Image 1 (tube, rainbow, N blue to C red):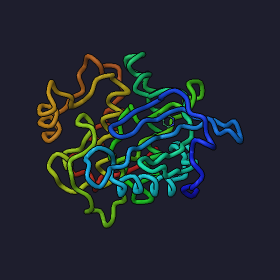
Image 2: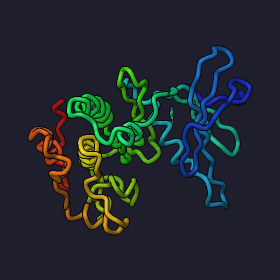
Image 3: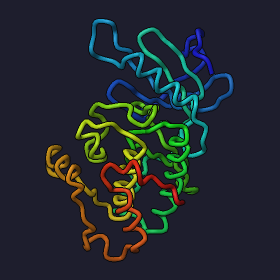
Image 4: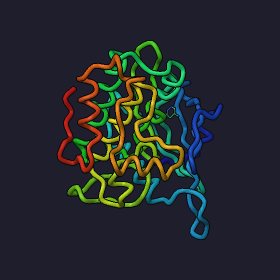
Length: 264
Ligand SMILES: Cc1ccnnc1
């Protein structure tokens, strides 16, 4: 995949918006030559003077990570176009909606269905961690369903993902408050355990529909996280297996860089 000089709009027709973020909009598009559908992520570049838009360094980091990844449970990169004041990343189109929507509809999932999704999420994360890549924004909104019948997931959005070099690499507050690990809040270094913490949060949510640390304010959520203060409310967990609770407890461990395991 190389970044083209032939303009994106000669090769693709673009259609409805299917996702949007801070500096990016994702639209369904069709490659004229083949008729194949893709998701085109339009990212505004930050100008030398402005503050709007994403820094080129960050856009290129996301692209380089996507080029390196090749896993059935992670979104595939198709092409990249540099179009002046925006970069266009052409990605595999995933049509089954967000796992988040599924939980919102159903309240929570039956344990065997939650296990089915967690296995796929763990295989995607193992693929990343084996390459020293940490996602850093794992949450149900970033898990899409490739199609509702097959219950296959695709992990998306590597906008804040990083390469971890000798473990003590990146600092800086980011991620979504509800899912960030204590080391993010305490401005300590992140590591693969940072993703495992978020996986623990997602497992808790899939099984109960409740969010383990969510407070009434962002500040209260941060207090709950840094104290690792959560519990298995019997209102939701009465019929959940001990194995499932042990799995979650093993992940919601502070500074869990020494407890990363992928028993699938
Ligand atoms: C939102 C989105 C991103 C990538 N592929 N399909 C949909």
